[in-house]
Each structure stands twice: as C-alpha cells, then as structure tokens.
Length: 155
Image (cartoon, rainbow, N blue to C red; front, side, top):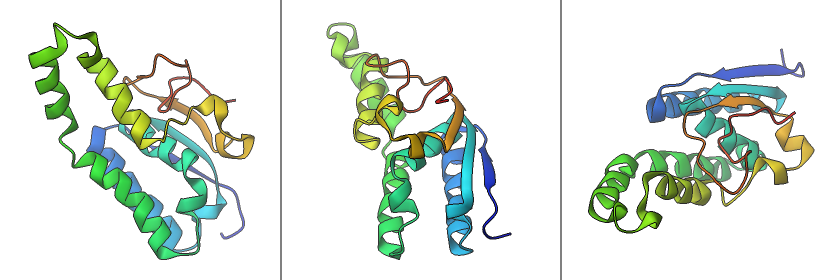
C-alpha cells in the first residue's frame, strides 16, 4: 500500500544478484513505492546495490527518469567492466612486486570509485537508517571498518 513503510531484502549471488535486485528497485520506482522503502537488508552481491542505494538515494528517487537511469547505469557499467579479470591480470603481473596491485587494494579502489569514496560513517542519518544490515565477503576498505559494502550494522 502506498504510504506504508516497506522493507526489502537483497540476496547474494554476485553481480547477477545485484542486477536482478536493480530490476526490483526499478519496478518499485515504476509503481511509485520506492520512496516508501525504509529498511534494506542485504548480503554479498545484494550489498553492492544496497550501499549504492544508500549513497545515491536522492538520485534513485528523483522525479526525472534520466537521473534514475544514470544512477542505475553506474551499476550496470560496474558489472560489465570485467572487474575480476582486470584485478586478476594485474595481480598476476604486478601483485607479487607491488603491494598496490594486491587484489584487495585493487577492489578497494574500484568500490571507492563506485561509491564516490563514501563511507557509511559519513552518510547522513537519513541515508544510513535505510541500510540496516549488510554482510559481504568483500569488505574492502582498510580506511574504515564501515566502508561500503559493509559487514556491520549501521545502527
């Protein structure tokens, strides 16, 4: 029902799950229920989208269709970027010699770009209240224990 608080749960499954759940976000937006989402629970691949939603909530819920599409396009481009292949190739070629090419360090840089360097600690209370719990094997940023995606509660 419009106007009632909604909770969504995003499962794991890597980029496939992230893109599947992006379709759910799109459907909720199309039926004008996305603004009613007050709580998001997620794991693994679903956490990539959940964190992106928390950081970009205003863009996802904007009135202009182009704003939503541009925001969603960031995730699609991220999924299509051959991230695993690029990280693995650089790690095999340079990782043994240069720590900056370590797999975790590379993944951290990619997530930092996707989330614009945002950390859950720095998001407004309005945004972090939506992202209640995420759990991911890809806790990547050494800068904070609550980087996006996160493995701890934001509350």
